[in-house]
Amino acid sequence: GGGGDGGGGDGGGGDGSNDGDDDDKLLSFKEVEAFMKDRKVKLPSDMMETAKVHGLRLKAINAFLAAQGFVFTGWLCRTIPFFRDRILGDPRFLFKVGAEVAIDSGCATVAEVRKRGDDFWKELELYLSDLLVGLVMDVVMVSLMAPALVIGGATMVSQRTGVQKFVSSIPSAVFAANTPGVSYSAFQRMMCIVVKFGEYSLAGITCGLVGQGIANFMMEARRSSHSKDGQLGDEDLIPVPPLVKTALVWGLFMGVSSNLRYQAVFGIERLVDVTLAKRIPALAYITTLVARFVNNVIGGENFIDMARWAGVQ
Image 1 (tube, one colour):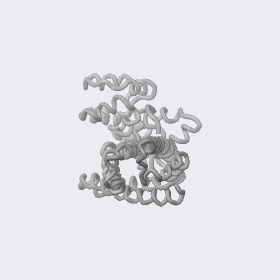
Image 2: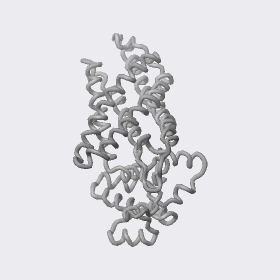
Image 3: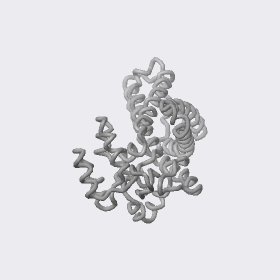
Image 4: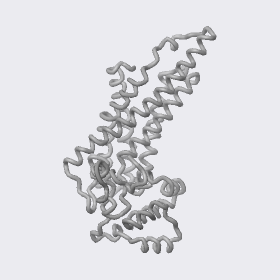
């Protein structure tokens, strides 16, 4: 992941070459200025800088203008390049993020209520800390695999070197679409799994350290409070999960299980997009909800199995 680079490294859409599609033609800086002046809309400074050096794709400008019709979407596109490039690359990006968050939060809440029973309200802080970390992970997982639109011309990508150039040549997902000027090889698609393993693992370890760290702190604080009051209960005898080991398990789980499952979800969504959804657009939204719900259930079972195997649950 990254922000403000016009979508590099995430297989967004094209290199800015004009292949006959008027919507995908490249506009010069002066053309961009005139275009936006006519529409009385101001582009973010980083997009204007890109226009000066590389030009701007008309497709990116039109998508940006369309996003301004919604307050929250417009604000994201104006202020956070990382999210902007993904919103421009996939009109349903925010719906997918919202669906992921809603489904995961709902399933997590049901599971927590069943697990904690009458103690749910007493342990509300633990539930809220788990929920907060889960929300961050949901946004990260969907965002890292979302295609980011390349807003500038071909030189924007060609000038990159080293690791940045290699990563920018890898699609955002194994089943990402080829676009004008960008065609992914089988090797590049396979390397996507490796790259996402690294990204997802890092996200998992980070969220695991934060989430488990908060949970452990709260467990110790509650245990200390109960000890002073002479009210130690059975729940206070439960061993505190090892922080680093738990975080590493999260990293492995995210890098392997989450990576492969989200690749499959992406592929299913794209298959429906290019087939059934062309005739019945609502099917794309239904597919996202169903696929991500099933993915969440399978993921929950996978994590329990992996946590037990690693001895952290």
